[in-house]
Image 1 (tube, protein in one colour):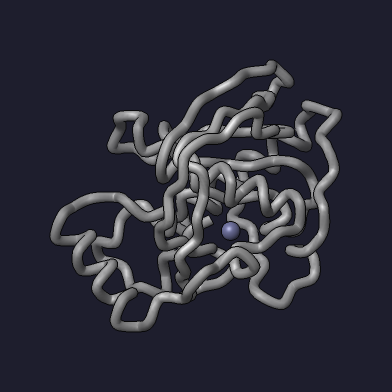
Image 2 (cartoon, helix red, strand yellow):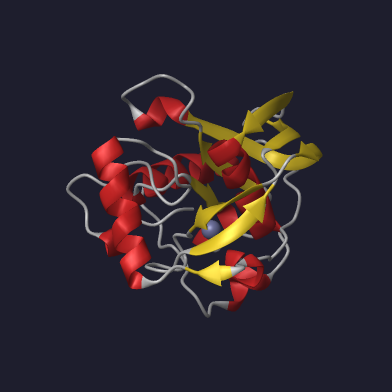
Length: 193
Ligand SMILES: [Zn+2]
């Protein structure tokens, strides 16, 4: 396993559409293993393959509803994900590992049903809500070359970002898609997906 470089704002790869995965082979598994390590290292809530320069429909999501102290066990691998149904609305702050330090209000569906394949090509479906639904939508957008900045309704001010981190620490809650925890981390070290 290896930590891969996360592409940053301005890299044109982030604006390209990713291709479907057809071979569930060792190469895919290496990509997934590297993405897992990269996501954990970055303390994000999601990561899409184009963010590490691979234009394939591969996404990782951290599902905080999976009860575990080990982030590794909360990661879900989505190959060729397709959003089947969505309902409700949730307007909350959102960030992206490719856009460090930037947060904005983005309206996303509150509930999302999607289909995907696992690393062996087996089909599955899931219904996710709130922050996890937000993460799925954000990552699927990456596969279509859509970056969250194009969906931002309003950017958070520096004061609001500070407040967001302070209140999250105080409540010990994990409400934002940006990152899982903020303990012992600087704001600019801890983005989302
Ligand atoms: Zn992102």
